[in-house]
Amino acid sequence: MTLQQILSMFFQGLTGAAFLALVTMAIVLIFRTSFTTNFAQGSIAMFSAYTITSLFSKFFIVQFPNMSSLILLIISILIGIIVGFLFGMFIDVFIIRKAKYSNAVTKQMITMGIILVISGILPIVFGIFPLATPRFLSTKVFRVNVGGTVPWFIPSHNLISIIIAAVVLIVLFVMLKYTKWGLGVRATASNEVVASMMGVNTKFITAMSWGIAGGLGALAAALYAPTVYTLAPDMMIGLQVNGFLAAILGGFSSFGGPVIAAIIIPFARVLAWQFISNTWANAIVYILVLLLILIKPVGLFGKKIAKKV
Image (cartoon, rainbow, N blue to C red):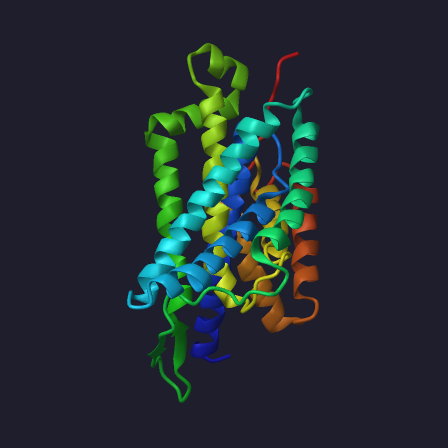
């Protein structure tokens, strides 16, 4: 194997990890504060991707033809992130809190119902015809000579996506550790009732967590969509499934563990594809993850929580 192939594999795994880490962080953030899994995470992200594409291609480009298309795309992405943020907050504040019997299972069923709602709204709002994905943040491809006759090509959009994902995740972890909001999240994740008794506004914490999770999903969709060339209602299903898988593998009891698992899974898939089989790459990775979970049910970085009865 040449150095170019090794570097290409590494960059491919890192690109997949950037998309997956954002989705995984969104899933874990909701689980730690609301004690449930949001099955509609992918649908919210997909709706945001449609919003971004429609704004960019049907409104901004038409209304502002003389402006830089990159600036218009960035504005569209920011609006899409806001839409995802508001969508997430709306689900928590106006749907889940209004449920008569609010428990983990009820919340999961509500999010499954939201998938159906979004699937019905999608053709009404954006039409029934397929939409091309948003343009790349940059179409430039870097050519790096690392020895040998074949250079190493680096798509700039993928590189920008990796940088954006890394910066966003670092900011989130800093906020979780050093800000009042982060302290509230950690307190709510530890014990919601006790946190509320200690003066933590748990309703605000959960609403913000759902909103931030929606925004993270929208950002992930905006970065991922151009790499799949066409928008489809099921575009984010694969990332959502792998996000849940990463959260389970890393351990739902921590924030950092699932993100590390979200980096491991794409690299494992690339290695399986390269050395074993392209057809069976996903199945091999899922089997390996299943074996790891059987060995350590709480996840690689999870901890058993002892409760007094």
